[in-house]
Length: 296
Image (cartoon, rainbow, N blue to C red; front, side, top):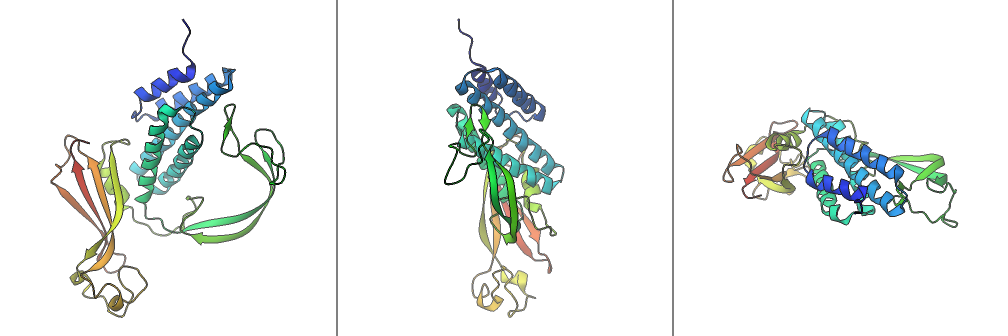
């Protein structure tokens, strides 16, 4: 009887342990896949073992981010989330094990969801001019006119293709809101109320939840001392009198959160409101509404 391929065995291990929250388990699984890949002779099997190892590593990165956030190390957690984001994106670029694709997409969405709870909005983005580079697969110093044929971020024979930069020159630094490198956060005083609130509700890194940012109107009585000719409390840069004052309330960001119900959690009829105090005047400027849903 023919023995099953190593990639098939390890894929079964992943499916049986998909929500296992152990950093050590995923680290060891990734190491095992890399060892098996080194002994594989077939390119298809090498690619599948690359996928197993990459999935284990991406999960390890996510668990590391969750652990950092749980310890209050929010910026390091943010950086680990970015690493996990890139790791899952590489898996989506190279779907060698289709039966795990649904979990790759789910984990990638989970990372994006966590990133949306952070208060970071502005980032530093460097612009570089690349003069010379070479392919990590074949070593050729390819150009747009004379490419080597290997595509960056694609896997060949179990190895990821990337460009080794041989010569580059910095051009400029910009402040952006949609950065390529999310770790380049402007170092300001931030509050992590929303991140912490989600952490407090969940019972583990894979506890099902979802959320989205919307807006909620706050009564003008909460801004009674705010001058009408000053900037609107909603941060629109318009005057209060010409922005939110003529409406039913001040428009503020609001995070709508849904969490799968677990024993010991509030019932689905219990709604929790979390105000975040304003920066200067003590008024609410963000809220979170959480609903625990049974049957999820």
